[in-house]
Length: 307
Image (cartoon, rainbow, N blue to C red; front, side):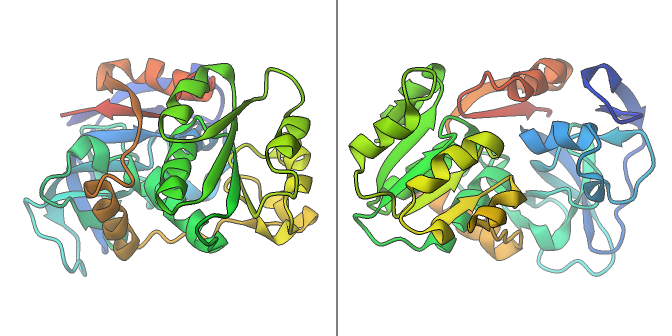
């Protein structure tokens, strides 16, 4: 038996609870891991709210929260290639096992070995935030010297997008709240505080001819406010709002395979894709960890140290 944090019905934070569960049995194409570190993402509470039921793997309640983790392989299901018991790995829990737990199952095709020299803490942030940053900038394909606007630059994904964009010699303008300024400016972002003044007017002052690309991490009204700042609406890419297509933009095309995980890990080792980790919580403090992300009060990435 191991401890896990999850929920027995869809709803707000009040439905969350700790419970004990037997170690999951890895099915075909899965690996059982001992979780060392789990990443915390907005997707986690969206799942709890019942807004993305397709990510529960069809499993019955209670469901365990969390989509990404790093840990050690304890057992292999049938049909698993390229991984062995004892490997240090990181990846996605795409079959509904959750990662806020002492043990869980990851989808083997979406899991990779942690390279020597990379910590489990950093590795646990790469499946969601790291690969998203790589995907969105690859999709934009902007040349050095181009301008990119990151809407929602202060979060875990936003800071990695900005860091990678700076590394690719793009001119990066980022929009965020006052509390996110320091972290963004530390990596070379020209920061626009949306709580002060007119965001659109300030952006037009900085880039009068319009942006070569816009990466949206906020969606909704905010997306529609900044989208006209793009030279070409096709170069507005949203990570979380599929309605971006209604205004001529695109949703990010995600690549969750092992190859992209390995690529993200190499970039992290090289210091290009190093996350800003704002808080490390023990498993016993999961409620506070998730609440910080759900309330939008964190700058950078929050992780849960389990082992």
